Length: 424
Image 1 (cartoon, rainbow, N blue to C red):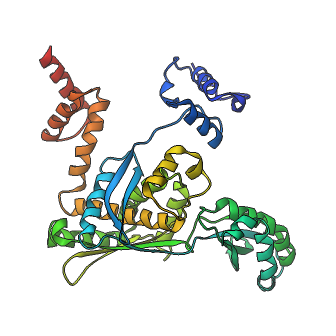
Image 2 (cartoon, rainbow, N blue to C red; image 1 turned 90 degrees about the horizontal axis):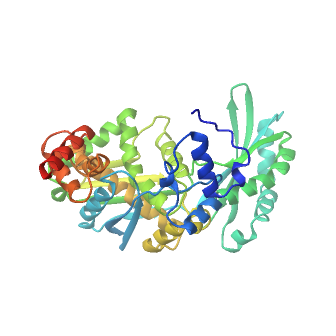
Image 3 (tube, helix red, strand yellow; image 1 turned 135 degrees about the horizontal axis):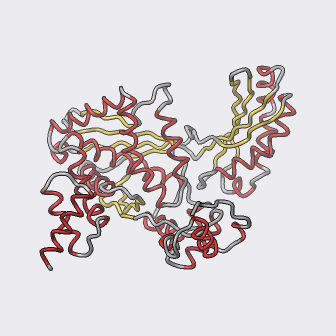
């Protein structure tokens, strides 16, 4: 049966009705999609309010990274990820950093930027100056849109006006800089930009097109540094290998892409667990990696006078504690409660510390035994379960997989068949 994706009125149905309709339209048997259904009705009701056309939920494992000391305070860090070895690596490297006082961090004020694009301006450079002359008026208009944010100490702080030369066009682009306090800030800055648009167009003498935030959150950087003990890492040769791996990533974009992915394994896991916008954080991070005009490593590594590894990381971190899934999803609320953070800046500091720890964990594996040994050891359990192993069979299959070479699905099936035949 061919799939029919034309489903009139689909959005009007309940989640259960949508799931039934999707099963029928796809030609699948009743029950084939039952795993998408949320385990509890209250979770399904929350999901139905969060996005459109909900039929169920997809659960992601949440682990807790231990051993983190950040600015003298200990944290238990929730991490939501499907990838083996991420939580273990972060916890392990946090224990290594702990030997020298843990992680030290700093974070900028939570300034987000919204862009107002003006097209068709006859005198763009003069228009740029006219907009600067009207800065006080524009900031007042912006702050009228969110009196609560202003009351909390936030609000529009300034403007920047750029001339952007594009293919066959010149744009006047106004940046509105907004202190969003403990929010991620997208809704606040977008609302302000929408309100400013008519007046900006009038002053510039053109027509406004886009008015929306940028995820290049380079006014909202979080920074972390830590010393990782040479002997705990495996000795001077391992430390040298980590630095060589970093230098490779700094010089080569092919390596940098995977190097930075390792950083994001840690960052994204915490961002997701706390209900924040993973795509916004990832876009900002990778944009920052290319800020010099060449894509390179986000982190930096050096060897100190004492032979220990010194790691640093600086990355945009647009996360919040109010609004979005952080407030609406009970699992995200529980994760924030576990962390014990009280501000968006504190959350940003924790996130970037986990990113550095995860990065060191990956680099240490590369410099020592190779990334596959530890990763595939954990992955073997997933392979065994996928092959059909249950209960005690899983560990038995894993043991054989690890001693026999490659961790593959076909080998797991064969091993499982042998085990079951031996019991019959």
